[in-house]
Image (cartoon, rainbow over all chains, first blue to last red; front, side):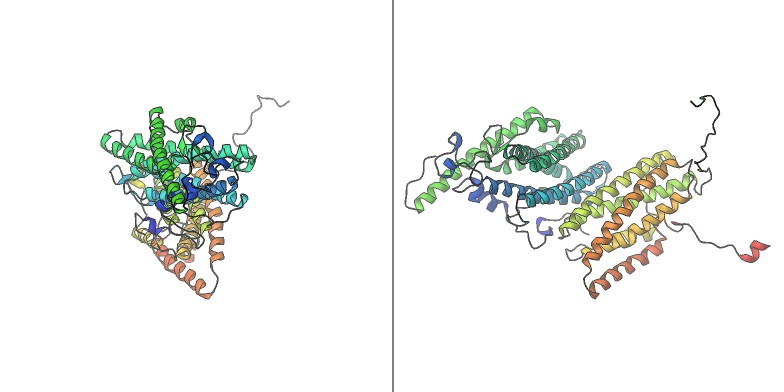
Length: 303
Length: 220
């Protein structure tokens, strides 16, 4: 068996539909165009919605299409868990044991094997939750972004990109979904998200601990890893949908991130990156709406 | 109320553990080193295969089993220093070249159409041989002096039996016609032949030897 797979090597059955990240990000249902998932009625009518924001409101149970928003997000979590399982598994296999830059310590492999088990359970939980929410496997698309981060030839960068950035995002998403389950009166969703949240904190902490251990005498490698993490954080800040703001689609789970080894300044940095992404996303949404309105022969709605 | 001063035997009447065992400290360390090597190669392979199998149920089972074998390797890793091997890596070895060849052959299938070959290698060849070697060790070591190894063997065996059942049921569910039967049988035969040359996961004597004393000499 060869080492170091690419995204193209990922094996899936016939139900899964793969799209690239660009297509996913430009899906008007995700970036807040008319009919965007989970927005309130005013927002969908192009009237700005809550707090005057366009397309970036928090997912609320009483929104007309909240069930579709929640199902879409849950399916996204499910395919993310599959990729997290695959990524952790590959890190068990792709590297020799040792202290070199292209090697990993035995204890790191043990941690990745543990993560394999956790992610396998998360797949089981997620697939049952998707069924519970009335969704079929493949009803929504899959973007292999998490596995892509897990293909990095440097194991430390995998940990930075997957465990610190993307599993960190999972902390924020699970915390948000847990709250959504609570508000929507869905105890099954709330229960499951809470359990998965506990595991994700453990995985992020693994990333934080290994980042510290592997770079204790190598500040340059640490800087490279942090830079990669920052790039991934920016790329997956969900168009600015993740922030400290109360009405943010995904709220930064500061307390859980602290438990997972993030410093306050690191969390502030993620919030700032997200703010920048939000501004860019709002510009994109405004441009998209203007173009749609122009095409329809009417003036663009106020934003 | 029982008299607390009344002498009691050090071993209760139901406790039939005995001192004699078949293995020295050195031989135990050698076997444990082989166990750790095999468990490591296995958990690495299972983790690596997860991304290459399209079947969702198999993918999730491999991920779960990957951790169990990693944990077994850790049990043996921690046992080695207790057996006077302060550098566990020194004894983390295959028993012979044939065992290396076996693991290379086991992990060779890669494509997404090779799930049956992957599963047969693990669940119809390697894990049965692990169960055999662990059981032989369990049944022949000193139940008093080697209690820590026995405890780990029991933990590992519990997992092995459970995983073997999982894997065997997955295999049975994937065999749908004569061609599949042949594929599974050919794969099993290919790997079993190498394992026979290796003599088992700890080399010749993995499950003891069946030497019957020569009758004439025995009667002399």
